[in-house]
Image (cartoon, rainbow, N blue to C red; front, side, top):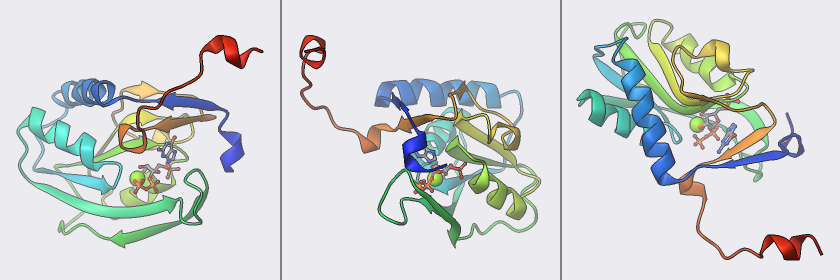
Length: 165
Ligand SMILES: O=P(O)(O)OC[C@H]1O[C@H](OP(=O)(O)OP(=O)(O)O)[C@H](O)[C@@H]1O
Ligand SMILES: Nc1nc2[nH]cnc2c(=O)[nH]1
Ligand SMILES: [Mg+2]
């Protein structure tokens, strides 16, 4: 999908992300306990912190995967690049993988090939990636771009009336 295929925008506030990541933690209580979390950086770091706090998990490893924004456009996908692997021995049995979202599912596919036995959880899921995720909370359409709070800042906006002139 190229960047102009995203014609809907879904901005998420810190409060909303916190609430939805807690909802994810509630769902995961039915699945755990887990030996630890593997957060997919960077987007999985904040959701992983919230889930770790709620499930009293102290051990968090990371796997660094990048694919979007490599060419300078945040919404343009490039090749999957595993920049740092996690340090877990074995196939991930008993571990929880956390990411902010699954979109095409390519990131999830790459991480699942490394940790096929781990439980994969995301806060948001788009239809193409949904089959790759074991647990998620909120589904958005494939043509929606989710804006996370760390990518946003409050700014003045014109009133609706001025947009219709
Ligand atoms: O399902 P996919 O199409 O692979 O997209 C999902 C991935 O894209 C984003 O990461 P990104 O590569 O932008 O890196 P970041 O987490 O460092 O922002 C997001 O955090 C997911 O990890
Ligand atoms: N921030 C953000 N990153 C993504 N990476 C793949 N899809 C998305 C999205 O909708 N929002
Ligand atoms: Mg990511």
